[in-house]
Amino acid sequence: MQVIRGVAGGLVLLAGLFCSTAWAQGMPKIAEFYFDDDAAAKPVHALPPEQPGLVEQLMKLRERGRKGVEATTQLAGIAYAENRVELGEKLYQEALGAVSDNSLQARGIRWNLGWSLYRHGDAEAALQQWSAAAQAARGNVAWVPPTLALALW
Image 1 (spheres, helix red, strand yellow):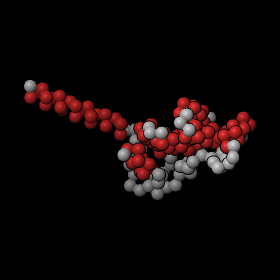
Image 2 (cartoon, rainbow, N blue to C red):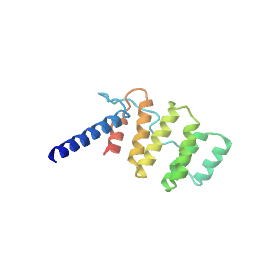
Image 3 (tube, rainbow, N blue to C red):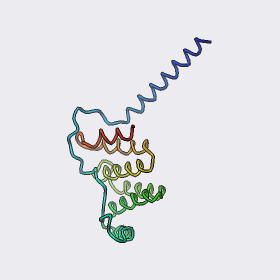
Image 4 (tube, helix red, strand yellow):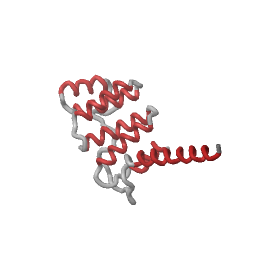
């Protein structure tokens, strides 16, 4: 009986090690220094957030096609802040679909989506978005260690 428990315990440890190794492969590579700035790591604002009638103005920008990606991203952040998660997710995906995967805009959208997810309580999904943004960045951007640590905490 004790042998069976020992074997079962070993299998559980082995499964845990396998899962953690597979999970760690999705994380950005570790670097010694993180000094680089990342222009994508900032809130996306097509219009100032304090502007009166912000949502209506952002909708007009989308209709006109001017600053459409920025307006869509800002609307997605507003939707998440108002607990309209499905709409926010749809808008973020629409914005991501309008840009190339490794572009500065895509990194900015993923960075903002990560923060929206984190504020909404989904740290694991936020970590996925931030990891994707970090892997697409050139250099060792300074926001990576503290942001990923926040999600892993």
